[in-house]
Length: 61
Image 1 (cartoon, rainbow, N blue to C red):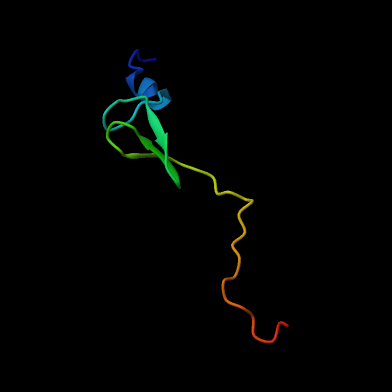
Image 2: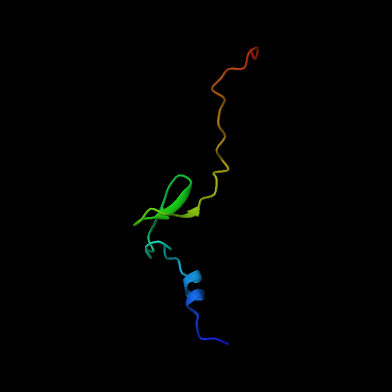
């Protein structure tokens, strides 16, 4: 058994791998680091969004 747990500590923290910051901001598609801007986590898609068709269907009326 080894006493080197630095790899485990690094993998279990919520720090930015680039700058070490713990602050994040949410964008449209992902969370990014507030300090350096690197993408941190993808956000889930909004299941309630249904786009409408801006083009009228020919012969619908």
